[in-house]
Every structure is written in C-alpha cells, then in structure tokens.
Amino acid sequence: MTANAKFFAEDKKAAAVLKHGVLRRYLAKFAGATSSTSQGRRVGYLDGYAGEGAYMNPRTGVTSEGSPSIALRIARDQAAVGVELHCTLIERDRKAFASLSQLVDAAGDEHAVTLCGDIRQHLDVAVTGFVGMPLLVFIDPFGSGPDVDSTVETILKRQGATATELLVNFSLQAVRRMGARLWEPEGAQGRAKTLDRMDEWLGGDWWRQCFLSEEVNALPKSDRAHEAAVRVASDYRRRIARAAGCGAYTVPIHRKPGDKEPFWLILFLPRRVALWPFNEAVSLALRDWRAFLADVELAEAERVDREMPGIVSQVAMLQAVFDADEAQIQRDAIDDIKRSVLKALATRSSISTRTDFALVFGDALGVGRETHLRSAWKELAATGQVVAPPTGSLSNVAIRRA
Image 1 (cartoon, one colour):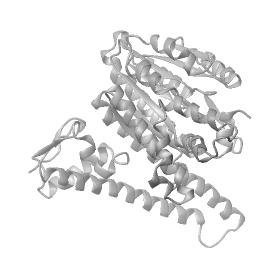
Image 2 (cartoon, helix red, strand yellow; image 1 turned 180 degrees about the vertical axis):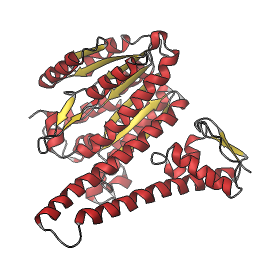
Image 3 (tube, rainbow, N blue to C red; image 1 turned 45 degrees about the horizontal axis):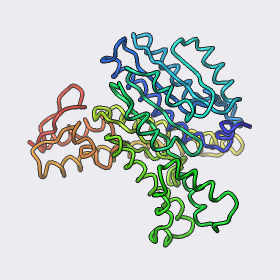
Image 4 (tube, rainbow, N blue to C red; image 1 turned 120 degrees about the vertical axis):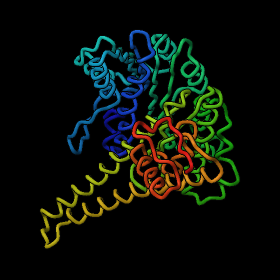
C-alpha cells in the first residue's frame, strides 16, 4: 500500500475534502484574476507533492480528485475562456508517479509537465519555467516540507513575477511526532537525525524552545506536543511572511469538529486583493466539509433504519439536527460580522472591506463570506446604524457610519 492509499485507508477523507475544496475554488479564481495582466494570459501552477492524481478509498471504493486532477480540470475550464494554465506536477514515489503520468497523458494537456523526484531537486528549475507568469505553488507533503530558504528565496521572492502565492499544508502532526523526540534521552536511536531534519525544514533550531518552554511542559502530557506544534506553526508562518514581505491567511484543517487539527493550510500572499477570493473559497470548502461529515453520519443512520426499523426514522431525526446546526452557523456568521463592524465604527467613521478585511469579518473570518456580509450590512442599515450597502461586489467598498 502506498503512502497515499494509506492516507485514505486511515479515514482522513474529511481533511482532504476541506483542503481540496479550498484549492479547487482558489486556483480557478487565481488563474482567472491574474491572467488579465499576464502576457498571453498564461498562469502557472506548481504542485510539489502531487501524488497519484486521484485516490480511491479502499473501504468505500469511491474515487476522489487529488490536487493534480483538480488542476487539470481547472486548466481545461480556463482554456475555454482563453487562459493558459501551465501545470508542473512533482512526485517522488515512483509508483505514484507512474499513475500521475498516466493521468496527465490521458488529459492530453500540452501545458502540463510531470517530474519524478523530490521537490528539492526540481524546485529551482521548475520555478524558472514560470518566468513572466503569475504563479500559485501548492506544497502538501506527508511530513516535513521544503526548507525555509527555498520557500522564501526560490518561491516567494522569485524574479520576474507579476504575482506569486504559496499555499502550504503545514503538518502539525509531523511537528508533534518529530519534535517530541526532544523529550527523549539524547542517545535514543534516530533522535539526532530527526531533530536535524527539523532544523533543516524550519530554518534553524528556534523551534526547539517551543517544545522546551516551561508553559508547554506545565500542560497535561496529552496536550504538550500539540501546543508546542501550534507555537511552531505560528512562528513558522510569521517568519516566512516577514522574510518574504507578504501576508498570511491560516485555515486549521480538522478531521472532525473539536479534534486537534493535524494541519494548517496557510496561504502566503503579497497581494491584499487575494484575501477576498481566498476567504470565499475557505467558507465554501468548510460548508463542503460539514456536509461530508453529515453524510457519513446519515449513511450510518440509513443502515440502522434498514436493520432496525422503528417508528421514527433515524435519518429524518439526524437530518433535522444537521439542518438546524447549519442554519445556526449561518446566523452566527452574520451576527459576528455585525458585532465586528459596530465595534470598528465606534471609533471610526468608515472601514474598508479590503484594507480592513479581518476587522470587518471578525470572528466570522473563514466561515462568513460575501453573502453573510451583505446580510449583516443590510440588517445594520435597516436599524439606521450604517449607510446601506451598494448593489455590486462588496470586495472593495467602505462601510460608513450613518
């Protein structure tokens, strides 16, 4: 069984639904938006850990799109409107690469290139191939990723770029597992090698203090590694953004509500205008994720109804609960935006949906999107607290105190 097959065999599909839901929406927006100022309407996409391209869940038999399949489909869609999406897909595992190559060959996309090997050996050449094109790089390793210097200098500071963005699926579970070796005796087998690999990945040994801090080690043992990993991820994000002179938007990736998130999906973005479409993509992907989890429970309820039919359908009861929960999530997003807007306008006469993006959405960031903002704005205007919203896009407008 390959690492990718094991990925689904271990029931991690919900996390993939969220991650890929963000990617497929945002890549399409990125290509469409940046192509308007690119020569020949050419746009680049680099996938550093592409995998097979599509994955079958061995328990359900259901095949799902991987990131290469998503990119190739978007490339077809963009080609229909005159945009060339050039895809470079890198995969290290030879068996996975063979499947990936078959997928690309079947697609017949002349602008899609596959490379076998580690991203570290191909990164410089691959990035150079996108000179003059806007570029979105997707890094989704099964453990540690490219080192910090490569991330900043080769990708985010590349030459001749009109727009370069980096979407990293940062593995907290890898940091938890590898970093916890600091707590082992110094002579433990493989300990030094693992810690050195962490130093290389994260650009120094600064991360070790996150595991050795008094605050972390005062926590219950079951929480220490995760809290340390969160601190590492936060500092990693800050260091990359500061070194590259860009912003960052973080999406915690959960397998189910309330669990310790195994990943952070982080977009490093030099263009403030990218915040709006990325937030839209995140909100809609979270909706997909909630629907997926509901479907899992509903499938089990259907089985119970078949095997033990009763007076009240378990499916009907669960569906009613899920519908009520989803309605409450939408309502909460609207209310959170209203509170955030009013708080900001208490000291200012207006706020911008672009430059004050996080301030506008507040606690609804990631869950709320334009439709929630419009509803919140209309409700505030109806009570005379703000000037009514415009009829067009809300992505770059001012909310003014009435």
